[in-house]
Structure formats: structure tokens, C-alpha cells
Length: 297
Length: 200
Image 1: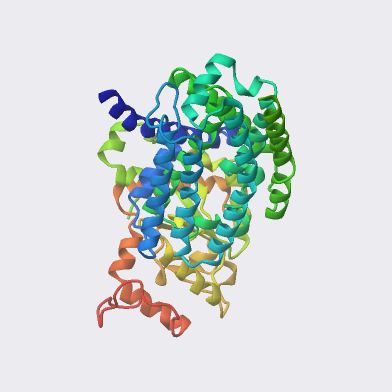
Image 2: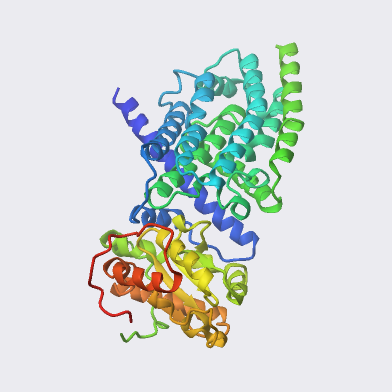
């Protein structure tokens, strides 16, 4: 009982620390790729401290509540994902519940920033919802494949079965789905080929246009959680989770650095090109994986 | 006010005691998010300080996308009557605490447009400016010297243009209305009937 309480408190804290570390690391690695020295790795924490001490402007009740809704959604998803050996709530619910609650994050931001009534916001929100429509089709196909293969919807069960049978990424029909997940991972994280939502040069950071001060700080924390969730799902579903948080962190780090390298070299897709890509290659691969798995199991 | 150049001073970003004791001052010091008002040629000097030659991100300086996210306002070039309205609106949208820096000789005194009928010669009559960088154009190094000056000013608590703007809002608003005519946005703070003193 006490251990469960500790896990429920410790999991979001750990997820926040890992996400913030990844935000700082991404700025440092991008700077090194540009042949710059780069900011210190603690820069996102400095930014958050500054933002919390700024005077912030609200645009209404929904503007306040939407950010909190989004943050609450991400914390709930973090609790449902096994982190190393820590299963806070992951034995209850399962993949279907995660799929539903993951929608709260874009929905909260959309509700909140819609109150701002800035034309850049509506463009950003429409791009965000279209993009999530793009990557959720292959994502659902991939999750269906895993459910068919392991005969369960519980994510903790999938992790423990991979301990017995080896990582899903290197087993025969499932590696196709693993590649498909890796292809849509930049879209889930909002990294470079798919950063149309927050395109700084086109729509001046999209949904975040009207945010300043504490709201932007909360949104940064939300972004850190989103980074954690996208990568942690990949590690749990395809790289076999881990027995303790340290190994889990190392696996996440490797996946994230691979994504950063992709982020560094690619230009940005237009939204129609992004949809065309997402519904072509990852969806085809995910469908092939589903068909192969349903024939073999 | 006399300010000593802080060339021999060391950065105190890694001193955790200072962070715990006074996060309100340390935060803005090492996380200056700039928004630049590209009125003239000064904008040419901004890309080099952000890219690999003079990487300003070492000190936590980066460009913000919108005024709501920014706390450093760079006015890079001459200010015409038409752009003054946009400058005031941008300044009023930024959240406190905010710092303004006039960049180049044009915002200081009109520069080479000193006798133009359409150029603002004294920018700090309309918005408070915390510091100036002289030169036509200033070298990127002088921007970093300006940043160290701004750090010293934040430390001593004299980079308080946003407080002055709130205290003397009546006077600033009157000056703005004098050159722009009727303003089509509501006042940021309440306007008193009198007070504020002279226009200068």
C-alpha cells in the first residue's frame, strides 16, 4: 500500500525530470550540430523559473482551465505507462484507456488557446488536429497488432511477455510494426519533419501565440510530459520495457537521440505532404504487420 | 547614473545559493527572450549573434515568436511615425518584467534621419528605454557588452522601465496621443486627470 502511494507520486516526478532533461538535451545537441556551444543543459528549468515570475495575461476561464486539463491528461497517461519496474496504475486500464486519455492533451490546448482568438491560433489548432488524425490511423493499427500478438490489452502484460519472448522490435512479424511506430514517432513528438503545428517562421508558434508567463511555463511542462509519453510508449511496447528506471532511461535516451538526428537534418513538411506521407508508408507498414500477425497468431 | 563596465565580472549562473535566495532576479537575467522590431537595417546584425559565430544561446538569449512570450524588446533601426504605434502596442503586450534596448544610432536621436519630418528623434518620450547601443551599425560584440550591462542593471534593480511606464502612464499616453492623434486601443493602466509633470 505504501509502496503503491510512493510509486504514484514518484512516477510523474521522474517523468517530469526526464522530459525536462530531454528538452535541455535537445537544445544542446542541436547547438552542437550547428557548430555552436549551446545553452547549459539546465536552460529549460531557468526558463520555467523566469516564466513563473512573469505577470501573465489570461483570456478567460476556458483559457485557464484548458491548460490544466491538458496537464492533468498528460499526468494521467504517465501514471498508466510502466516506467522501468514501476507500475503505478498500469495494471488497470490498458492500451485502450491510454488511447482515449492521450486525446486530452491536444484537446485541452485547443480549447484553451481557442479562447485567445488570434488567427495564428486557429491555423495552428487545425494543423494539430489534422496531424493527429494523420498519425492516429497507423498508431491504432500498430496497437491492434500488439494486442493480437500478445492476446491482451494490458500494457504491463505486454512488457512482461516481452521479458519471456524477447523484444518485439526484433521478433519476426512485429518488427514491421516497430518500424512503422518509429516513422510516426517524430509526428507524435512534434519534431522536425512534422513541426507544422508550432512553425515559428510561418504562424509564430501556432497555438502558443497568446501564452505568456505562467501559462507558457505550464505549457513547457506539458511539452516535457508529451516527450516522455511518446518515447516511453515506444520503449514499453517494442523495446521490452526495463527492469529498473535507469535502464528504461538509457533506452529512452537512445531513441530520443535518434529522433533528434532526424530533427536536425530534415526541413519541414507542409501539412498536406505530412498527411500524404503518414497515410502512405507508416500506414502501409502497420497494415502489413497487422495482416502478418493475424495470420501467424 | 554611473555604471561600471563589467568586463572582469564573472557570470553567477551556476551559484545555486543565489538562485534559491533570489529567483525573481536570476530568472530574467539568464533567460532573456528577445523580440526585435525590424524597422531598419539593424536587423542584419541579429542573425550573426544567434548563429554559430557569436552564439547568443550560450547566455540563454533566444528569439521569441510573439510579444506575449518575450521579455527583451530590441528596436533595431529608425522609428517612423507609422511604426511608433506598432512599437507601443508591442511593448504593452509584453508581460512584466520587460526590458527595452534601442539598437543603433537611429532610435537614439534619429541618426542619419535627424532632419526628417517623419522620424521619431526621442524614443524614450513614448516608451521607457532601459539602455542604448550606439553605432551605425553596432558590432555584434557590442550587443554582448550591452547584455552584461543589462545583467548589472537587473542586479542593482535599476532596469525598471516597466515600473516607470506604470507610474507615469498618463504622461506617456499624452505624448503618444500628441504625435499619433487619437489612439485606437484602450489605455493599459488607468489615466489620472493631472500629474505626470512636463512632457520631457
